[in-house]
Structures are given as C-alpha cells and as structure tokens.
Image (cartoon, rainbow, N blue to C red; front, side, top):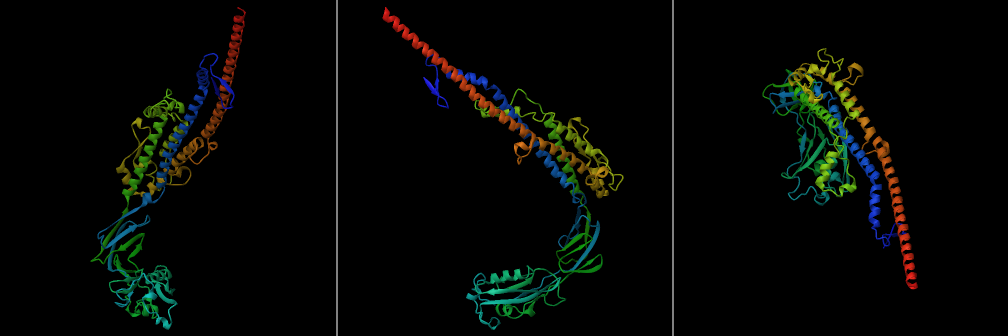
Length: 510
C-alpha cells in the first residue's frame, strides 16, 4: 500500500512491515506540533490583551466625552426663565443674561403686510399646477402677446426698499410663479392660492412696519393686477409690536425683543403687566456635574475591576484544533475564564487611575472666590468605604448651595484652561486621562492602525512569522519521517524478497 505526498513521491505505508505508518507519523508530528500549539496560544493571548486594552480605551473615551461637556460655560452659567403668563409672554435667557424680574405689558402684536386678489379672479376649475397659458388669455399682459415677460416689483425690509424681478415664461404654472416670487425676494415675500375664493394671496414673511405706514409691497398694475387681480391699494399694512418694559413704551418689528441677554417672545396682548423671572439654572448644572461624577465613578470602578481581576493560568486561550473538539457551551465557559485577568496589575492603567485621583484634590487658584478653591468646598469627597477604591461622593445640598451663591467660581474650579495652579479640575483629569489613553494606544493601537504601528501588533506580526517558519519546518520534519519509514519499508521489502529467493533455491536443492 502506497500514498502520494504533495510532491508526488511514493510513500510506503506498512505494506512490507505491517505497521500503521501513517498513524505513527501522525503521532510523531503531534509531538513535534506542541511548540506550535504554545505559539498559537501566545498569539491568541496577544489578541485578547489587545482587545482588552481597546475596550478600556473605549471606556476612557466615554469619560473624555463627559469632560468635554464640563468645559462649556453653559454647564454652570445657564439661566432659567419663568413667566406669570406663559400664554402671552415667554422668554429665554443667554448665559450672560442679568438675573432678576422683568415686567412686560404687550399692547399690540406685530403683524405682516398682506394683499390678495379679488375673489373669483380665477374660475372654479382653475388648476394652479397647470400651465397658465393653457387656462388664461395673456394677450392683455402689458399689451403684448404672451411669450416671456419680466415682472418688476419691490418690497420693504429693515434695510429699506428692495427691488425684485422674475420672468414668467410660457408653460409656467401659478405654482411656478409663486416659487419665482419667493426666490426673487430671498423668501421675504410669499404667495399662495386660495382655492376657496379662487384668488391669490401675497404677504411679507416678516412682521413689522418697514415703510412708515406706507405699503410694504409695491405690486403695480401689469402682471400682478391684470393676471393675479391684485390691487396695490388693498394692502393690509404691517404693524410693529408695541409693549411696555418696566413702564417704558417700546416697539419691535416682530413679536420678540432682546433686553439684557433675555429674549422675550410675545404670544398675545396682555391685560396688564406680565412678570418674567430670570435665575440661574441650578438644576441643569447639578444634573451635568453629578452625571459627570457618576461617569467618572463608573470608569474608576471598571478600571479597578480589570486590574484586580483574577487571572486563570489553568485556562490558556483555545486553539482552533481545541475548539473543534468542544461544544459551544464548553467553549463559552472556557473563554470566560481564559479572558479573565488580561489587564491584571497593569501599570499603565494603575498609574493613570492614580494620577486622575490626585487631580481632584489639588487646590485651584484664581476661581474668584477664596471659599471655592477645592472640590471639598463644593461638597465633593472621596468615599469613606475603602472598597470603593477612590470613587467620589457628592453632597448635593452643598453643591446646589455653591451653584446658587457663585456659579462662576464653581465654573472656574472645574473649567479653567490656564496652566499651573489655576488649571481647572476637569483639565487636570483630562491631562491624566489623555496620557493614559495615548499609552494604551501606543501598546494596543486602534481599529484604523496596521500591526506595525503599535507594540502588541508588532509582537503579533513577529509571532505570525515565527509560526509560519515553524510550519515550514514541520512540513520538512513530516517529509523526513515519511522518507525514513519509506526507506525502512523498502529495506524490509528487499530483505523479504531475498529471503523468499533463498528459500526457493534451498527448496530446489532438496
């Protein structure tokens, strides 16, 4: 019995000796393969460690996102507003708005100028989406036959009178004309079709009186009068909003007005003064700060868990050959144990976490308030439970009190991009965080990097080369074993043949 190997040379498989040569070679190769098995496990361990580092960096990146939110002044200085009559006056306040009470009495709302064609300018079966030239006789348009006509008009805004024009072309529908009016005025004038009264309505999109009581739109005779049926004299002119602010009469071309960083919106006339109160939005600041600390504690808890996680040395990573002999549940349980402790006692993470902890307790100079120079001053302390490993606790009553008293000092405590002793808490924590993340990236890379661009990747690439070289040597060893057994088979076969021949000769002599 013979077998062909890859280079088609003949392999003797026990025909002469009666031995199971193939089984013997496989057993020999299994022994030869042990170093490769260890290399495969080492390669898998490198991959698992890389993935564990990257997962840690993802957690750190999430914390970094929370830090970014803490570095906006709106986190600490945002304002809230309340109105005694939300149906008439509402308000929003910028971070710089002055706190206190504002009295607003709305006497008149601002309105936009509007004009309309006469009722039944068009027939009941008129279709604004069909070509005008198929539905209307244009021979009287400017006294010329209808082909292409340029329509000129003007309107007023805060900058004064604005000229506008558009072309009406054969095949244009009324809807096309409306679009051209809007385009010609940058949306300052709009028109639409009133199918109930078969007429066109045109109006300014911005409320207010921009022409001192005169027409806001100059829609002279011609296309507007002859075709759309609009009479310039029928315009309902726009009005300004009129209101009293703390007893002072004021006007606005629209139904809003900004004073001292507060934007008032007028919804309707009022029967008397409406009181608007502007204050610091302590609830929003509390939510942001406590949310950040919760995320910080979650991150610290995760990192401490990874560096203290038990490493199960009796459960090395599985090779492909091993997984083929196991059930899915067995593989799952094994991997759970083998992946534990990948970052146990990792110095990069332990030192990074320690640096972040230290960042919280250094005093911050230049907050503007000598009573707010440390997180301790605003009610943030380290948990007294040693098992919490440096997690933070918040005295919400004290933090709320400090935010009400001096939100700007609290902001300077957390957020100040200066260097040295004036550097804010979040900047200091971020410095430690960035340093840790950069070190992890140098070691474990990210999804966009090639193997040669990070330390573990280079080790993995080197291991792959070693495994390839070993595989090549394994092929050579296997060929050597087959050659040896083949020669043995050939020798035995030759000896058997000689023995048979000798027996035949001896038998002939007797």
